[in-house]
Length: 177
Image (cartoon, rainbow, N blue to C red):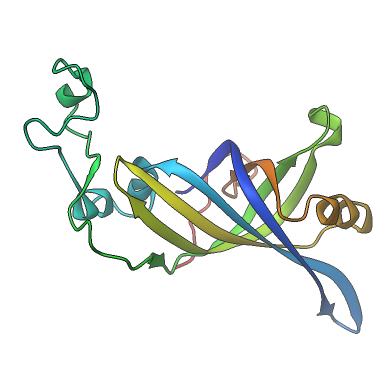
């Protein structure tokens, strides 16, 4: 299941409200965009990475040195299979109940921790060289104080962690499709 720890990402913050019964409560959508190794694709399907990437052909190594040790790893797939493909890959997956932390200030106490978030809208833009530009949305219900901090970080680089939901024994809870 998808998770990330202390990932640097650009964050766009969209403030809104939701109706919970007769009352309106603060709500927001964070859109996060970051570069990641293409291994992240395997968290969504074991075959996704291999369907988009391939091993380098002889003489195509990223390093000038012909003794590229990464070539010994069968999972090393840095080259795009379809370099002229321009479509972004969208995955229809929802992770309900995730914990999202926006690391802020001196860390720890000043982190913005958002519980019971909905992580969705996964988009992947494969790049040659073995990286993927990942874009995702986080629907959350920040407190008024958290909303102020998040708004102050609008369209800036932030450090985030996303943890899938766990039960009371710390076991991962399945995700929705």
